[in-house]
Length: 508
Image 1 (cartoon, rainbow, N blue to C red):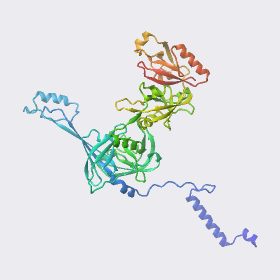
Image 2 (cartoon, rainbow, N blue to C red; image 1 turned 60 degrees about the vertical axis):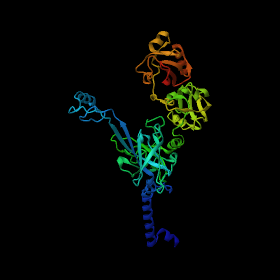
Image 3 (cartoon, rainbow, N blue to C red; image 1 turned 135 degrees about the vertical axis):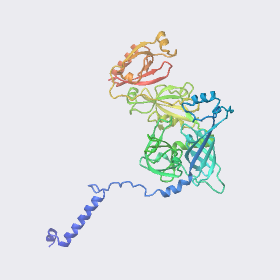
Image 4 (spheres, helix red, strand yellow; image 1 turned 30 degrees about the horizontal axis):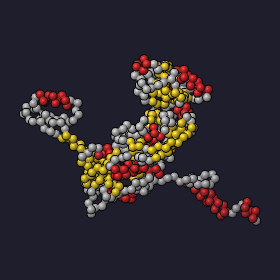
C-alpha cells in the first residue's frame, strides 16, 4: 500500500505539491538566491527621508556676508563713470581731464570708495560663538556678518585664517538669552565611497538649502595647493556653498565644502570638501595661536615612477618620495638625509606617493622627533629627524617636482651627446662654479631623454647613483648596469643654477 501511494500520489497530495513548487519558483525569482542556497547581500537602500537629520543640524549652519571697502583713486571728472577695469578707462580719463570734466565746471577731485560683497556659508562648532568657513569667503573683508538660520545677524571678528587649506575661524557674540546651536566634527577617515552625505549652505544666496548625495571618492588632488586631500561628493554644491558643512548620517561634519568642478559654474555632481581630519587640526591651531604652525623637513621631492623605482632597486614597485634636493639649513640635512633617498615612511605613516609627504609633515607638530624610513641604494635605513617650522614666507620646501610618466617601451640608446665640463662651456651655459658633472651638448629629439625634458647645457651629475665627471664614465656606468640586467638607468640631472632632479631612462 505504501509503495502504491508513493508511486501514484492522491489528488490532494498532488495539488499540495504543485502549490509548494509554485511558491518556491516565486521566491527564487524574487530573492537573489545562489544555486547553493546561500543568500547574497541585500542591495543597499538609501534613507527614506533626510528631514529629521536636516532638522537636527540646520540651526548650526549659517550664511556669511563679507564686505570689503576699497579706496579708489581720486575722481578727476564729473562725466560718465566707467566700471573699474574697463579697457577704455584710461582713454576716457584723458579725454575728460583735458576738457576739464563734462560741462567744464572745474569741480575739485572727489575721493571715491568701492565696496564689494561676497556671500558664503559656515557652521558653528562651539556654542560660545566659534564659526568656521572658507578663507576665500571672507578674503580681506573689513566687515563680516554671520546670519543665523532664524535671520539674526551677528558681527564677526576673525580669529585666524589659513589660505593653504582655505579655512577661516570667526567669533561672534550671541545673545545671552538665545544660545547657539553647534555641531561636532566626525571622522572623515571612516567615510567610504558610497556613504550617504548631505550638504547644507547658502547657494546663490538661498540660505538653508539642503542637498544629498554620496561620497564619490577620497584623497582627491585638484592641484589647488600643496596639501590637497579632498573628499569628492555628488551632493549638489554651488556658488555660495563654500564654507558650509558636509554631514554624515549621524549629523557630524566630515567635510567643509570648498570647490566644484564645473564647465557651467553650476553643480554637475563633482564637488570637493576639506576632510574633517585635515580641517580639525588647522582649526585647533587657529583657535589657539591665531595661525597655523606646520612642520618643516627641508627637502625638495619628486614622484617615483616605475622606471625610477627599478633603477633605484626599490622593492615593491613605485612608491615613496624621492629627495631631489636638501636645504642646507634644514632638519633633513642635520639628520643625514641625502639626495637620492626615497622616503617610504614618515612618523609611522606610509608614504605612498610624493604628494602624501607634504601633508604628513605639515600635520606633524613642530619640534617633534620623528623616525623617517628611507631606501638608499636599495637598502632600507632609518633616520631620526627633529622637525623645524615652515615659515609662511618660505617657498613650499616639499613641492612636488613632477616629471612625465615613464613609457612602457624605451629606446636602448640614451640619446645624449656629452662633453667634459670646460671653462668655455661653463661660461657658455652659465653653469654655477661649484657644479661638477658631464655637460649635455645635444639631445636626440626622438629619444626618451627629450621626452623627459633633458636639455643642452644641463649636467649629468650621477649615473645609477654614482658620480660621473666624463662621458667615458657615463658610458662605463651604463654598460655596467646593462650587464646587471637593469631595465633602466637613473640619472641625476642638474640645471645650470644647481637645481637637481632624477630622470630614469630605459636600457632595453
